[in-house]
Image (cartoon, rainbow, N blue to C red; front, side, top):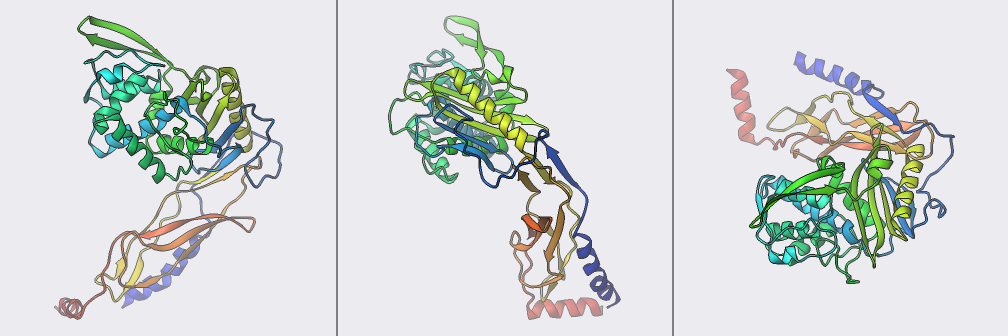
Length: 402
C-alpha cells in the first residue's frame, strides 16, 4: 500500500517535469533576412524548367513547387523506383549484395545509357547497383528486374504497386529504366520527390553509391577480362557543395530531368526538375532551388525527449505498463526565421483500464512555440496486457498470501 501511495504521489510530478525539457537540436541552414511564408513558394522566376519541386527529406515538407502535378516522361529518373525494389529485396532477405546476376540477351539489347554488359555476363548485385546509380545503365536495370521479378513485365507490375503504396497518384511505369517513348509511362515532380524521399530515408546506403563520381568495374566474358569506367551523370556532385545524389534522366520525349539530393548542417533537401530544355538548365534550376531551401530552412529535432513513466493498469493481468515515443519529433521552419524556445506538453493518463494493446496510442507529446502548436508525436503502449479474469485475481490473492 505504501508503495502504491508513493507512486501516486510521484507520478504527477514526473509528468509535470516533461512540460519543458532539454535534449533538442535546432539546425539552421544559413542566416537569412526574416520573412513570413506559410506555404510552399511558387515563384515561377526561380526555375526555368516547366515543372519543379523542392522537398525537405526528413519531414516531407514541400518548400517550393512549380506545376508539380503535370504528368511528364521521367526518362531514367524511373530507376529510382527500380532501386527501391532492389533495396526492398535486400531488406527482406530475398536478395543479397553478393548474389550473382546473369545478363540476358534482352537486357544486353537495351540502348541508351548502358555499361555494355554481354549476354551471359555475370556481376554481383552491388556492382549492378553501381552501374544503375552511377552510369544509369539500362542494361543493368533490366538484368536486375529479371533477376528479382523473373521478367521485366512482372517487375514493372511491382513498381506500379509500390508507387501506389507511396501515394504516387500520377505515376505509371511501363519499363524499369525509362528508355521507353510510350506516353503511358509518366510521373510528376511531386511523385519523383516522394519516391526519392522513400529511397534515401528508408535506405540511406544508396547515398554511398550515388555520391561516387568515378569507379571501375570489370567485365568478364568469353572474350576475356577488361576494365570499364563508370562516370556519374550527376554533375552537381562536383559543382554543388553538399550534393550526394541522386539520379538524372534525359530522352527526346522527357528532355532533361534530375532529382538532386544535397545535405548541409543535418538538413537534407530533394530538388526535382522535369523537362528542362538542356542539361545546363537542369542543373542550374536544381541548384537554385537548393540554394533557396538552405537559405529558408531551420530544423528542430527533439532527439532526447524526457523518459516516460510507467502507467498503472487497472484490472489487468499486470499492474503497470511501459510506454514509448513513436518517433523523434521534427519540425521544419521554412520562413527564414530562427526557431526559438520550444515548449512541450505531455498528454498521458496516470492510469488506464485493461485491456491495452501493444502499439495502440496511449497519449501524445505536443510541441508549442509562442503559444502556437508546431505538432505532436504519439506515445504508444509497449506491451499487450489482457483484462484480468477471476482466475487471475484468485491466483494473485493466493500468491500474495503465501
